[in-house]
Image 1 (tube, helix red, strand yellow):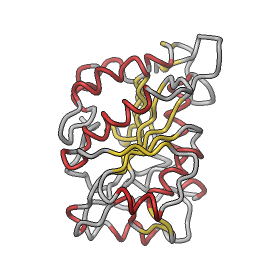
Image 2 (cartoon, one colour):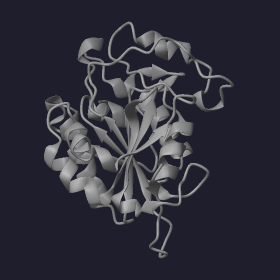
Image 3 (cartoon, helix red, strand yellow):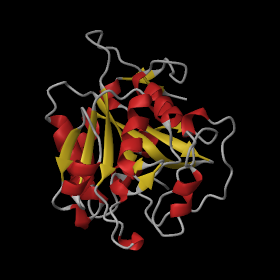
Length: 248
């Protein structure tokens, strides 16, 4: 497997976390997904904690539906909060807003690791694996590599691509150009299929979405537990989402 390694020698690569948290929860009765309760706190807080525990010190969070309420109720210290007034157009607009914010970050971000707010089955272990594959550092890295700014890495579950995904900065402009509606980066990844490094995360995470009232039981089942420290992965049936921006 070919992954990426940083050869600049100037500084450790900066991999930022980008959390897309703008969804309005249309099939959840209009409840913003960022504010869904999870272990007694808004879901957005847990997603941010997952990115940080996975090694992303820089985190940008894209807000949309009920953005002011999210700012008031969620504790997100140190995060760059990005408002997306076009959030109702779909995830593509949030991805574009997030990439624009990252490009302007003075800390010089080399790559971004993208996560959705409504995937609590993805924990720090999966984030770490994808990040290490993208930077060429750690036990999940490979020495045959491109630079981190050219990296394209995606988690794989039973052979199917999903989140988290990592985009080197060299790809951001192309991704933003094609990110429309709810397709996100799907078209760009399809066009660069051969450049993607797959990272198997089937044993440490499950990429289900919280989209419907029935899905809310997934949050309830997590009460009092921590995804990162569980001894065995849960093997509940995996339901494919209607929204599949990274899957083939």
